[in-house]
Length: 421
Image 1 (tube, one colour):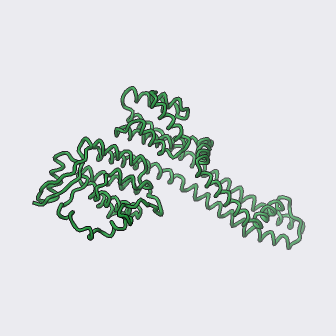
Image 2 (tube, helix red, strand yellow):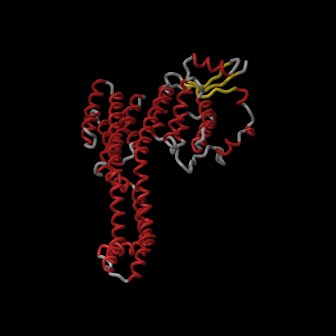
Image 3 (cartoon, one colour):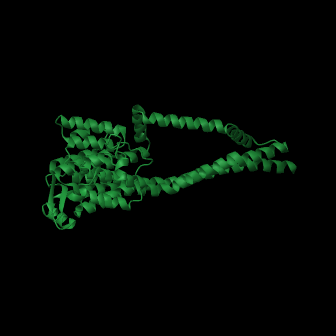
């Protein structure tokens, strides 16, 4: 019988590297599943022992001149949340069905259309084939898999709950992607109107008004004061358009570079959260992500101190990150989670009370999930309300601007007509 070598994990998270005899690869896989092992890799031992010269071209591309794997991942674009959610769900289904992890990633990667994720999957297959653990493979791609993803996979490997953890991650990514798509869908129409409004404004100020300015100047008639003001402002804008464009571009670039610094990033996030109305909506969205991430990590067995540290980076907001790290320090000194959140001062009373209930009842993950769903619903309602109010508002602004330009053009015509009479 053929000899198959395998790498697997026990229910306790211990790694097993051994071999067994079986008639076919399917029989070997079934035998390992009956033993309660999560198969990471399974291959024919005779096929594995091939000359190094027969290594694949892809493996050579992934290796550095010293023979070690490269750690350069300067991809041209990031992976969208939708693509990552689909990848994770397919991987969770495959692993839960007993497919070896390497085979599952290889099969999914062959059908991927997203170029970055396809390239990452090829590298993951190669590294798993070389004996790397799945968590270390994940860690090699920080632009695709964030720190939370790595932390959960690491704990899942140690606890032997990789299939369950992958399912939880897939559900988390799907919910986050669903909320983002709803927000984008609601904002699509107002954004289109805003862009259309800007285009019309540029056409009017750069092409139409200058032509009327020339026409009225040739007539030699006295223009109304309102028309003079509008034409003077427009002339200044047209004559200095290039300088204004350069100035605005430099200002935007300066703000972008400042926002990437540590102090600038903190101040930028602080201003976002303090913005009227929009700040409250953004805060609820960030808190929803925080609660969802913390629920998954606590439910997966991650220690609360490690979970808070990882979730602090997952919030994407420097202000909340500092507060979460402060909460972590208080918890490590012996304080309750709810009391630490209350002392931080940034977390709403609802979260503090619900976390206290979760601590007392031993159902903290479930409570955090419920809080996250509540905030996600509130965010969606707030976005719908804002967009419903924004549409007529931008139409009114657009109409008022066009009315001003029309009056500036027609008032001289009325004046000339009355003088002619």
